[in-house]
Image 1 (cartoon, helix red, strand yellow):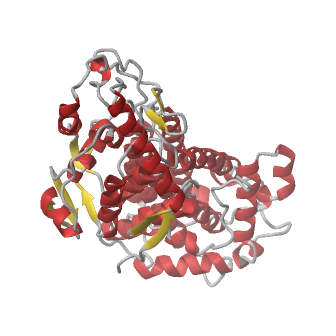
Image 2 (cartoon, rainbow, N blue to C red; image 1 turned 30 degrees about the vertical axis):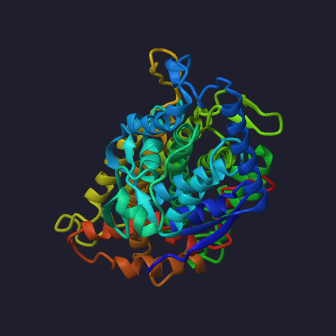
Length: 519
């Protein structure tokens, strides 16, 4: 089923996260506001004035990086920009997914539309046309150190605009020239500063981090729901979710998660069945009892990263910047992706912890001494292995995520003959989030399957109404385990169920928002 087209106007107002998520999920059509068009024209005129005045300004009529002191003749300015794009198209590795490329293009349009880059309106219109016709440049994922901007990946985007390289159209790979023709545009001849403005910026790192954020939100929501289902499966207590406990600490994420856990648990007949003086349990293990504390801290981290990335998405991050009101062109360092790198590292830690606590609950579910359920959640254990190796897979994935969670931002390798001597490493810090989110989604998916199986042994008692709806959805893709069967398809289903946000749908209005109220 084809995703609906998201149509919106780009101007001077920031792009909200909800819109950015829509841009990641499906095709978009963009229009420039009158204010944006006026700002673009003023910026372009400022660049023309500089050239006509014969002034020497970095990025307009000079070399780049260590070659900034090399002046370029007026007759060679178009060649300068083309050479810049071609020489910087040094990306390697697997291509970025179309969804991420689309988001990169949206972010680049939003940045250029602010009117501080000196770019011709025809260049922005070409990007808008590619988005409308769903023509996505082929961009290798590796090659950026996160300063001076995402040069290599963005060079592949710019190369497509001048008819070089390849693009994907409807899943088919075409030459860039053929793809441009399909979009109804001719290859561009880049004017002064345009190549640099297209290459310079944090759009690739930011888009990958945003994609990671959106996947993390889905995994987080599923983990909250899975935790409730697991708590019921082991006849756990909801006392640790009491609002009075969390009010005394005051951590906002913890308060919100506890409220969601309590609401999702409310009305469970399973829970009601083991209340009163006959209940022999005093305290549940930490992975059940401390869900508000752990997942609340995760929520606070996700919210902080989300705010950083939302700001970055609408920021102007190329260099130098054109201030048309004064005619000045100022060199700075907005291309440095340090904020994105920190946000990506925070999301990596969040994904790691979501998986860590989820795997621990699965380990308890399969352990009859801890759960009170049949060993490995299957009848005739011994003849059947049940969830034995599913839990091992979960353990393997959390171990892998721990390795991947090593912070990228603390590393730096000097580049460009030491002119660019401190870099953010935001690009690979953001790129790994997709793999980490997939790993964590499988871990949480395994817990969902295990918790659902645990509930089967407690029938005819039922969980809460939202959890029963979640159980029914899980059962559409994975029937109960009465005996061993080929397990891999169930894991694939569960991973996709978590990643695509399906688990969130069954707790609509109860799961905490990853946006801080009033942020």
